[in-house]
Length: 252
Image (cartoon, rainbow, N blue to C red; front, side, top):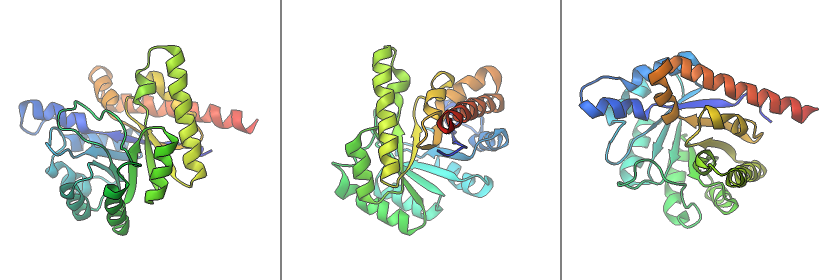
């Protein structure tokens, strides 16, 4: 088990608020600076085909103005591959994308999409971009990611975070645990994201095979009430407490 769990802060929805009125305020790059000061280990930004929040200019500025690693979320399209190869972010997480969706609705079909995805994994890997595949916590998808040669997977944990029935919640949680363990066995670095809140972060942070959580929408929403820096610090604190307890229990 890794003692420290990394926190990637997704700044997409700062840009969503900016774009609601146009102009330059609020500035997502300023949010990234605050996130770094508050304890984030990386910055995540999803450049969508329709540019509904993060823009090309944002990606360029993040690369120039932020010292933290940039994780570019992107669809597996030629346009996005060209942008990734031009900007060379530290990491690129390939996600499924539908124009009509409000947010990412699930994981990639890495198994069914092997032939399409292989070129993206290869070309970005050759450019020293750490490639991640955003997938469901499903052993078939984990195995497919390993076969594609992606060094990292990010598990879509939205079903667990959104579940209200306790039995369903436990079932979804166990799927995450099992998928993370399988990833570790296959030599994959395993991350998790989507829907994580103060309420759900503890159990997820306690999963020993996870190395990074990427959190965005909840942080930006909570920041309306208490400020972005304090919200990130509290998330960081809860992650650290949960991981410390898990490490102690595992050692005893």
